[in-house]
Length: 98
Image (cartoon, rainbow, N blue to C red):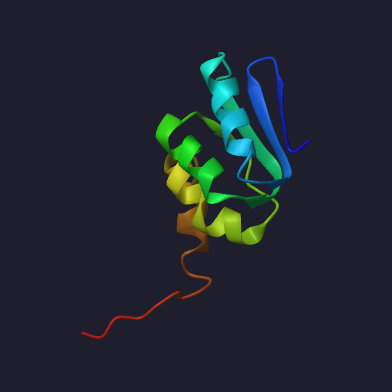
C-alpha cells in the first residue's frame, strides 16, 4: 500500500496513483500533520494537488529525482532553498539572451 499513516505522519511509498489522493486527504482531515515522501517513486497529479492545497510540512526528498527536482521546491521551498543555492552552479537549465 503506497499510503499509510503512523501517528501524525502520512508516508508515501512507491507509486502513488490517482486513487491514493483521497486516502491522503482523509488522513490529513483526520489529524495527520506531516507527509514523509522519502520513498515515493511516482506521484499522480491528484495526490500532488491535495498536498499543494493542504500545504502540510514535508519530510524528506522523493527517491525519484524528477519529483525531487520539480515538485519538492514547490511543496517545501524553504527547506530546499539552501540546497538549491548550492546546486545552482552545477547545471544551467536555460539561458536567456540579453
